[in-house]
Image (cartoon, rainbow, N blue to C red; front, side):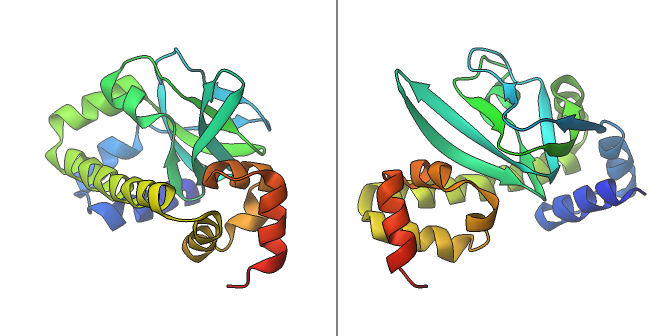
Length: 193
């Protein structure tokens, strides 16, 4: 088994271990894929065609409204990427998925992935548990947005993902926690975790 597939298997096992037969079916749908820095992989208005498994690089899902952007999530190894709601519903995306750095993935065509879900209860259970974990994280982040000050959101980001300061350009982190980049720099210099 390649090191990329081993990394994929290790992550999926944290959600729900697959039988050997399920793993063989699941592992066959993935192909290597490289993308350049600042490459938009999914456009708003298009239906997500792939599920990505991130091996290298950093990406983000973001929303555009008039002249503003809202960064919703970052993906980096080892995690799944893409616009999940568009993928699962096979409806046009409202969001963009772009690389922030050169990136290397395994990717699975949406049609193959969704077909596997239909006939494999273990794979469906693994995906459901993974999505439940993701949803819990998104709900926690919504609470932070609604109730926390800028400094508290900054502190929570660093507690949750201390390594993110080295991975993601600070202007995107500022956008992610909803503060001006200048204020983000001030927090970087004043807040100690």
